[in-house]
Length: 487
DNA sequence: ATGTCC
Image (cartoon, rainbow, N blue to C red; front, side, top):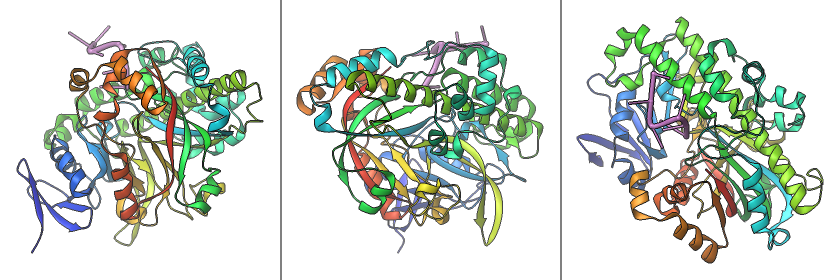
């Protein structure tokens, strides 16, 4: 007897614990799979996620199944929390399956400070960070620059930041892809996008983006934590942001171009927001190059915020950042597509792995994992809400087989921003966090705090539990917020 | 997410 669940005319069959399948039918090229507990599946079934996932199976060249991670929710065309691995020679590439915020991602910086070292300095620290790390909508970055410099950043990523003195060689080695995408093409990025980016280099932006000082509260795997340089009570810094207006502009430019030039493919797809360029076409190559360039821009963005953070810590604690051992643990992207070789039915194929709100989670042994972590698996950083903790995982042994080397990226929202503003008042949320949890929050706008209230997020513990039980990403450590700045 | 519509 098969266990099934039905949501809005979509039936899912239970394959095994935490694995639900929408069987292939009608125009679907492959089945779809949702990786979730029963509790998370109920939330995923609430909005358009399942229909979007089912639609995605119609993209030409989709391999095995379209996947939804445990934190999935509806997005533009393709679910946030979606993974689509598409043949890079005979399939297609879809900007909607990457997301508007190209290389939105997270990085964690270690320190050798303990929570005790920081207590009493929270207010000064949060204020100084807020003054020195640009945030909010619109312009204003750590550096104000010009189109020519933006082009350098787009082409060279972290290498540019090293030359300019904003990054070290160790920083570069601890970014996914070593902070520079080989196929990045600044010429494929419009002038308009470059102009939007030129005064946003080193800026958080708005929405769910933030910089958070955290303390490590739990260690689940001692040996892996040691390899990652994490221990209980340690202070770490988490930075979550992306490619700002530049990446957004790249996405809209190419959605429009692809819609215009590849109307034939578009006509076969169930949702125009899935617009895709056929593999081998001029636009597929151009979008891939422009996306790679926007990815480099986002890495530099997070690097300049790191640079400012180190300077702020130097000022507040009166020590050099090197003395506080403020090294980059790792920087992960969670809105990208990348050509990767994967095993499909016993054959190795080049695939465009689209991860939209999903994190690469390569296991131990893979050469893409930085040398320092190669024996334990890559670090995977999963931010929770500002009142809950965040997790550091390591890529699990089953990830290559189950999810094309991917896992979740966050807690995922449970209500709209509009609803959140009706249910919460920013200052109240802020006061409660400080009084009840000793969390110091500072934001450009009270509305942002309301929109990001801890209550609007799913249970990050449950997301991580499912990831761990599936063997795609294993919990290594947990952190809890101390100071949070945001747009 | 986003100069929340060129």
